[in-house]
Length: 150
Image 1 (cartoon, rainbow, N blue to C red):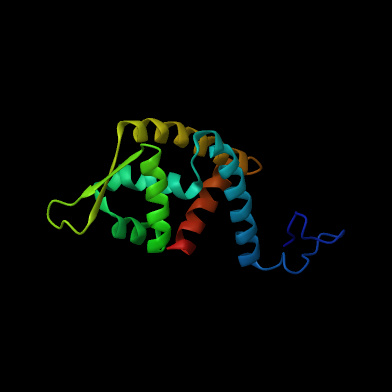
Image 2: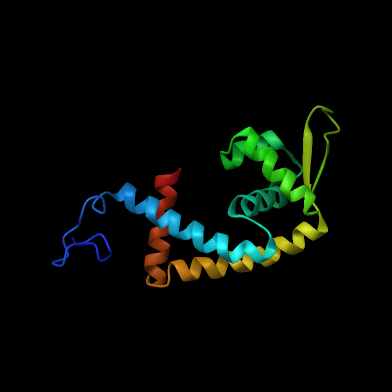
């Protein structure tokens, strides 16, 4: 099997490190992240803040700790992202009724509005990233990555 990309020789043989799947996954991640980050910039969102806002919209109200666990990001990063979202008016951080020590996160109407716009950007970025793949290949790639990423 040959890999058709910048990590091949003139005769199509893989060059190190392009012969390792993990390296190619990392490169694909970097490309996807850069495309998405650039596309989100007009909304003053980052991929991390977009992901956080989407989880809060879907799962909220939830604690900052729960958000971090769901996204697998550390506590300090969660606080910074939530601060950013709160300053923008996209998330309300309040005290949990059951445990006043816990910050409960809830998306605001402005947050729902910007999330809708960001989801359209995400769809467009996704399509741009995977433009060279057929619909079946896209589905197959998604299914395989979902299994690997579990």
